[in-house]
Length: 76
Image (cartoon, rainbow, N blue to C red; front, side, top):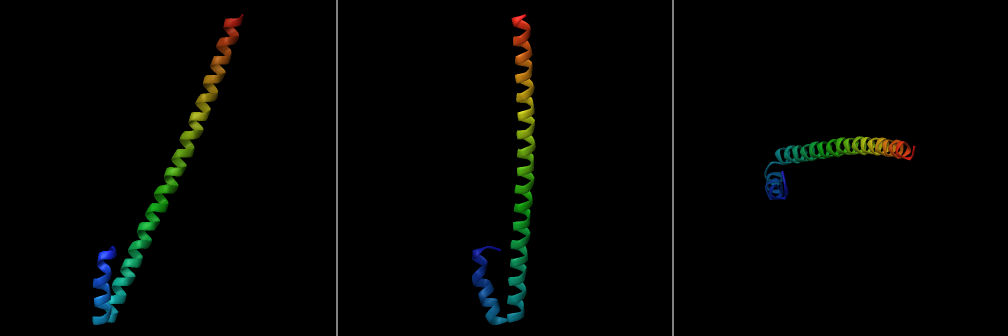
């Protein structure tokens, strides 16, 4: 399904056009499936990264709040 298959595909198109066209469509379908998998993976990774960043931000805010309360108690 990579560049090494192109000469075989070219030969088959010259020998039997229907077979060559069928294989060419198979390769195009394979490439579309792979691209869809990559898009799905990166979309899910971006979502996970955003969720993680939001959780880190929330924890940082809570830590800051606790530090502020601690400083307030130490002052009194």
